[in-house]
Length: 276
Length: 276
Image (cartoon, rainbow over all chains, first blue to last red; front, side, top):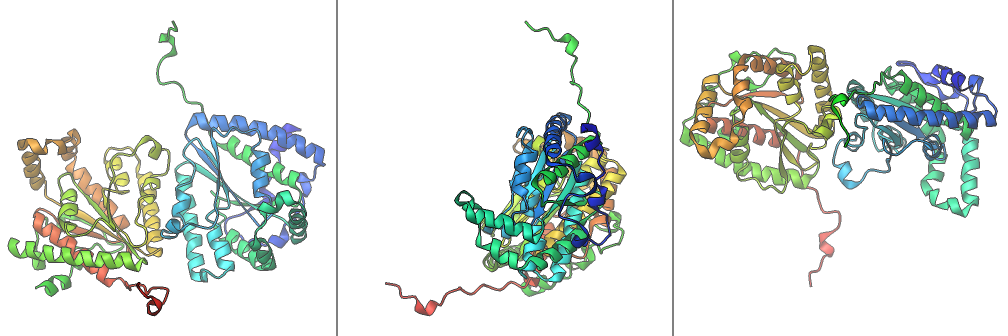
């Protein structure tokens, strides 16, 4: 079963370069090869997470490549959850999660990619962006902080930037966590009902929910414009948390296994070493 | 005379986007409108330097634009000298000089623009790069550390990067300090003869001198590929130090005067203020 999951074909959820993304074409529920029962799913995710840990150690030792996982999605879509569950068995030695909230004053004095560039993975690292440079073409556009021309230019700057990362050995994987509006209602209600979850709530959760169609449309434009061969977008069905985690774990294991990671040989002869 | 210098047309020394740069077409001596006598030159430079200080204060107060001056050139071409003389009257409050030497280990774990991006000017700042990202297509190419394909890709990455800076309000001005091989010989000899200047000498000064034609050719390719409308290269005649400084001072004053710098109004009424 482990082998089967590793071979699962995720390409139906990948947006091809140049094709227009219509999010209504994608179910927020797991379908096809993803529609396993929850027990199977949890077991698989755990195995993949352990495999991810080994592959990450190899990435670190090989010191030749890097991975950048970009997580985007509506409020409550599960960005934190993915980081908590998929990376449960992965050592923080070579993994960093970087959250991006609204830019600080010093960051606003620079181009929008300045603070992003500073946080990209070094060779050997796997970095997860919890929100990212994509906020600068999503929330800014929906709230009309930038006009259409600026937004189009930013799409181009993003593609060029990601191509720079690719050319230096960084694989960029971008995931849109796709939830339905009714699933978001359920999750927000749970947060309202549970005082332990109140810290997660912000007024913008409710005001942005009212702009749902505008956010969907901004995501569609963004994904269509910035899904490239070397940095594609995946539309991750995310109404089911365990299936969402399985998807991302599978994607990362496949990504790392496709990399040509070789353990470096020591640059001195071990034959000469005498331990006393 | 002050007014005349400000109006001097430097476009003959600017490389147009898309045109091939042949450095042999450019004299290393000041010619045409630049051929003033040394007294006039020093006087002009001093006046321009004072004007630069005022314009820089305005840049700082306006907080809307930035300037990045990139200085490149062979060893002894005068990068340090420009920074010392042209900015003699400019306050360090809003000016930073950033030297780039060989990249450190942590920097080599990232794309070649990573360490550069971290040092670009914030809005309101004027930053001088003493060497720059251009070393990554010059010294690396002459010493065959990168192949031609990688070099061409880097030209593109550089142009995209500079276009990102331009779109966020940063004017990029690039100067190649053009000296003759015989002038370099004279300057190296002066350093050899003066023990106080020995600290400036490195073995690479002499080995790189032997590769002079290869460096010239690498500069020509680089300048041809990366001189754009928004980030043009200037070929600065640099055999005469005072004329070289006059050129750069003029260029910077003209650049800042072309910017639409307006002093921001206070965001509260001064009428209500009563000092007690």
